[in-house]
Length: 47
Image (cartoon, rainbow, N blue to C red):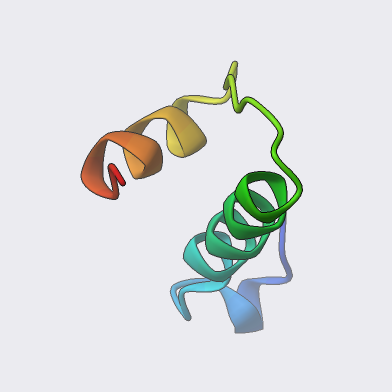
């Protein structure tokens, strides 16, 4: 995900990861990641 330089470092990737993961879990989807950021995020936030 690319954001404008002015928004870089504001935690937007983490917010997007949390929202996407929470939505998937709420809707009973299995989450599999091919994205290195999301894979690392999921390891840090195992539920």
